[in-house]
Length: 388
Image (tube, rainbow, N blue to C red; front, side, top):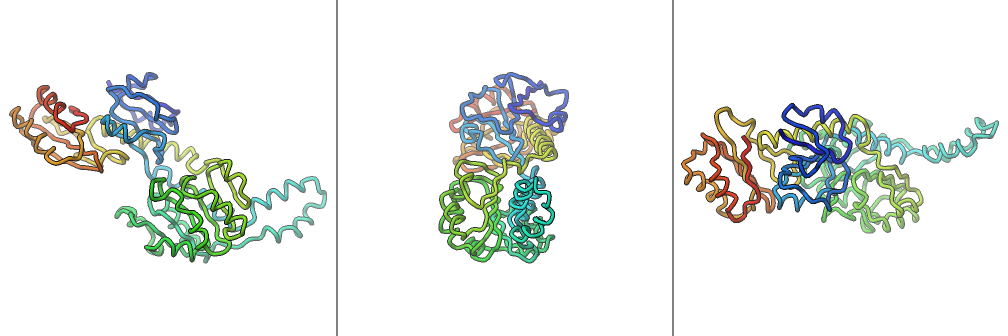
């Protein structure tokens, strides 16, 4: 029996996928896997039996991924599972930034008691008219699962779309409309686009990427959308650009004290992926990734270990998985152990990601306990699993 602990409420669309060999537990120390959404895990101590943490969502800032890698715990996320939800709210934000919708609604509420509000509205509406997005230039920074969907939808709405992503994957490239112009210089987006939307993770090279210099390059009155991470935009620089009119509007899904003080900012309470459908999709994807790892040793969509897939455990054979440091001679040392034990390796694969590496081996007989002991004693080995 494998035990799974839910740190947050996880949609039944995910937990209902658990088979009879799984049981939910209220005790995280007992768990082989943890399902989580936004609960903070940095101060948690993990039990020796914890093998996986599956985040029902894309961001993993709430999980100590480096510590997990050192302890041989695979951290999964669910990229793309909430893409449609975020895409839809970004399209909504484009319209909020082009027309005076928010101010117009406020005007109507402020004048609700006016018996002649209909006539007054005809006179007042000019100040909220705005412009159409059709034919305008949209710059999409980051063409992953969400950015690609936003770019394609904007093309369908008649926008002239430009995308920037130096690390776009082959799979993502296939999903992007041929009408999206590929830009290799980010400054070109800032200089030429009427609207800019950000869809990159928060990391060393992206935090504060929309700062004073970027704002100075923008077209006067440009509209900036941030539905990715609050730290991608320098708040002081954005406040200054809004006050001067250089940036016409800043629409963000992240309410912070600094943003709430900005004029011409439209702030939403982190609604991007908060749809029932997105939560269902994320939960199902997280559970499927977790089960495939626990049952077969396969890793897909991990943020701290390399992708590795050898399919289902083969009938009549056993499978061992070794998590280790990405250092020279580890593969030969691992295979030598099985050679010493007289065990034939039928199939194997080795993948690495940064300092972490992962080796899976299919064997023609059960994994000897003595082999496990020898593998665990090797310098640089973090965890050894007998998968099946």
